[in-house]
Amino acid sequence: MKSIRKKLIIGMTFILFSLSLAISIPTRTFADNKVGEHETDFDLVEQYIDEAIENYLNNTESLGTAIGIVYGDNVIFKNHGLTEENGKNITENTVFQIASISKVFTTIIISHLINQGKLSLDDTLSKFYKTSPSFSDITILQLLTHTSGLPYDYSQFRINSDIISNYLSSNTSITPEYIYSNLGFYVLGDIISNITGYSYDENIKKLISNSLKINDTAVNIKNTHINRIISPHNNYKYNNIDAAAYGLHSNVLDLTKFIKGVIKAPILKNDLDRAIINSLEAKSGGALGWYQRKVSNEYYYFHSGKGVDQMSMLLVNPYSKYGVVILSNGLNYDDVRKLSLVLERIIRTHISSIAE
Image (cartoon, rainbow, N blue to C red; front, side, top):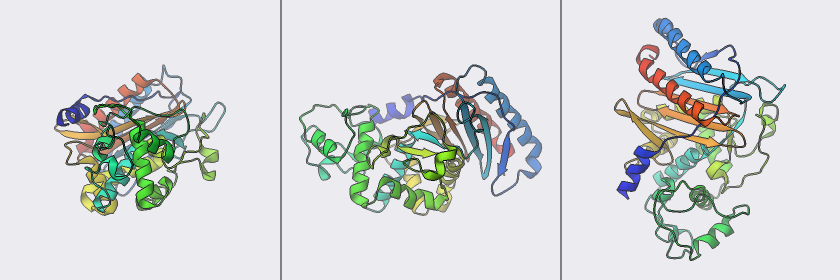
């Protein structure tokens, strides 16, 4: 198990997505404090950021991209392109499907239930389902780290509790190993709903949205999203099960607030903060629901997601207090992967000179 987990932590690389057309006038927002004496340093770093973004825009085919960068309490937004052809300009309020970044939110809910004593990383599926021997010993930890051996997906039909129960009671043979598994997170979504008695959306709102004052992060497209949604978008109605794997919608405004919540978690340590900390520094020896990469003797944590012609990426370093979110309706994975690495390196290199 330890060798599998080590491979997961060290060996994963992330796929990202394409960026947009011409650079718009950059927007800068300062949240709680000012750059002050570091103003010149900040301007230089912002120039590096603009140049890095521009380098990856020339050969892309996406209509629009929204980028949020957090350093300490400060946030800058870089918005490019349109919501659709002849559409509105992308802003930090533009709503995207964030797809598998939803798994990070699911992990935090699971971590909260663990902190409440309602769940354990060592709990097996036999505690929640009538399982066959193939599935009875699969643990919550294995589901969170994609090491259960469950396949990527299951069923050509819309997933529901009955389909999950039938599958877990079948004689299908699996081997515990790393397989990136949406099915594993379907199971977690079902367990969350059964333990809490709330929908996935309600759990997100009660634990995360209300605490961080984020208003646009929701499972399905809300009426308030209609004039701010990226195109193309998916009108599929997610349920409590598939939402836990890839059903959330959000924007860079909300996700930069989420990044700031992760950064502040080790200091504040309320219910949400403790859940975040547990997901990042689990006793398993690695993060839960996040991937992690070690640079300069500390880790940053990330997850990407692929929606309907959309890609998303969330990255946060809670130790040096910075993070990046990129949302795009493009599919040029390699360029965006490289851009995310460049932005992370710029911020990491200059963080001491631009943050209080």
